[in-house]
Length: 196
Image (cartoon, rainbow, N blue to C red; front, side, top):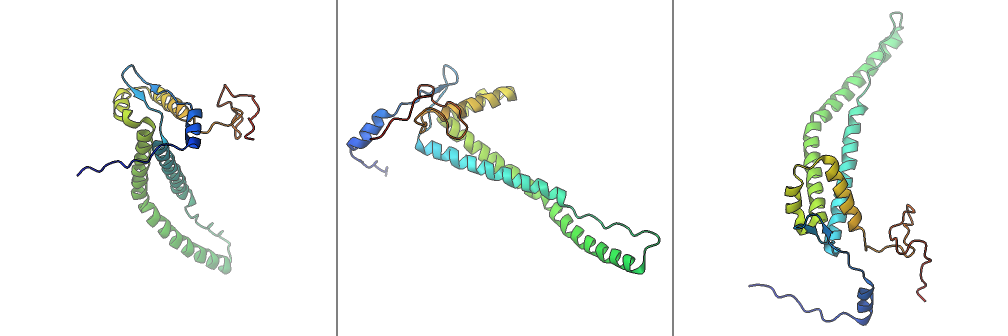
């Protein structure tokens, strides 16, 4: 039995007013046959969630790689004329080193497993992001770009990302408050309009 879509009624006058102020973003034309529709709220949420996953994978990767650098260091071998106390201290430190090294080696034995899992998680997050970025055109774009030069692919993805940001709560004066870049050329330099 097919579910029926609920009728939510007409938009309120205020929402109609806000809707009238919304400037639709034209689709991103990839070829004369392939275009990317600007993401709606659901796809934008997917983009944000996938980006958060990618960021988490990057942090996990950095932590995993830094664990390679924390190998314990052996104590310095005492000099030939070392006292009995210095030799005893060396033997104590060497026993500590052996225990720390055994723990580190055990962790490193799991490194490959963790690396493989992290690579799989990262690939899944990247694919999820691209699916949200390209929407229904994902399969066509992936087939089209299969043999593209990596620099062209990177530039294309950056351009589509930039295009996705259009129409998403632009600052009132057209300038990004964080970086100072002009994000809305039509509004650049204008004073924010008063809401009163």
